[in-house]
Length: 489
Image (cartoon, rainbow, N blue to C red; front, side, top):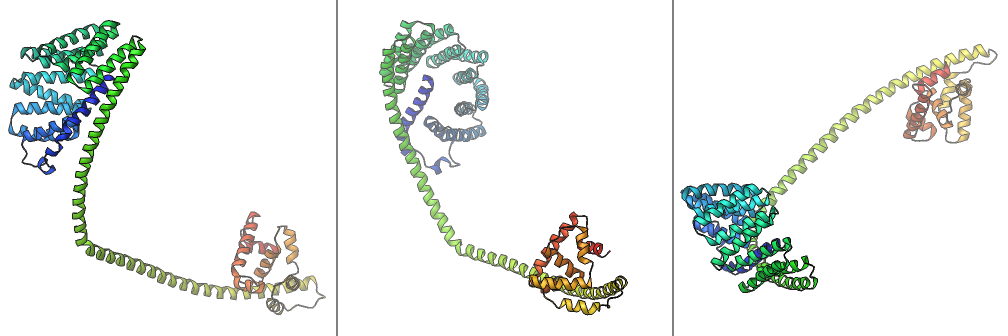
């Protein structure tokens, strides 16, 4: 946890230290100029790296790498590949980082750049350590240690020793971790590398605490804190206070642990406030630049829109008129076609109705004659009835009231005496309104004629006929006509 905090705080301090250089930053046009040299691009990449803008750094390092590779400068190419590997590592793309480190190592070995080769070994060891591939991590870091010894680079060697200790610590071999932390401390003392010594003492305190050596752990933590004050690094000071607080807490010295933790919190709070203020200022400055660029773009867009507005509006109006005209024409065509279709259907219906009326009249006459013959056979003593005359008179009556229906029904029963008897015999529950429809259908009247006699609308007649048809179908009659045939059978 303390390591994670130290990394975050270090990044914030770097942002604070470099925020003052914003005014000297090249313009966006100069940065993206195709005439920029590889050295310029690399410098811009380094600047973005220190600011923590890793995507921007990746962009500049990639452009610089392409230029250098095309020029054939192997040494510069190897350096840029190592830089690209660091950026990919920060962006948590370890696969790409390893590829860059490996290629940089091959070029560095080819050109005899031993320090760069050692750095690539160290960088690969860090990734392998995070992946818990300890065997390969030890191999890479041992190569780095060997190279830094050959070229006598104490600072790089101290970092490699510290990394070796970290690998052992991750693998829980605290004895070997302690050994390499001490070696790192020794190399730092040779060159008076105070920050490196503070880091070494902090790691030593952690190992001593894990081994249960209270005195040694507290002594190392105090030395770490003392050197942090000496170098005036708030980040290192925060880590030293936290390490001392953590050590006291581990050995159950609660008062001292709380005391140092409060101091750690105060330093951390002041550090965060300062960094947040600087970061906010930087973001505001960047936002101001973006706002200016947006305003320029908006003015250009407004000018372009003003020039094209009338043409655009005219084109839109013309398109709208054409679309409207098309739909109006189509609608009128459909109406015209439908009108012709309805006229043809109406003419056909009139002809069909006329034909049916003729058939109905013929049928009524034939049926009346038959009924007269039957009546004469059944009641020879009665006088013969003039069926045509009776039907004609019956059709002239209107059924607007119950009294009118009773009179109509009585006259109908005189012409068709068995009609109502047969309805009762068949024993299908039909309503009085449905009986009226059956009577008028017997007289071969169409829907309009039925509506005229009953004093209702043709739609009501059709609805009643549909209900009667459904009721008869339930009782195994295909249609109303079939039912009427069964009555007169």
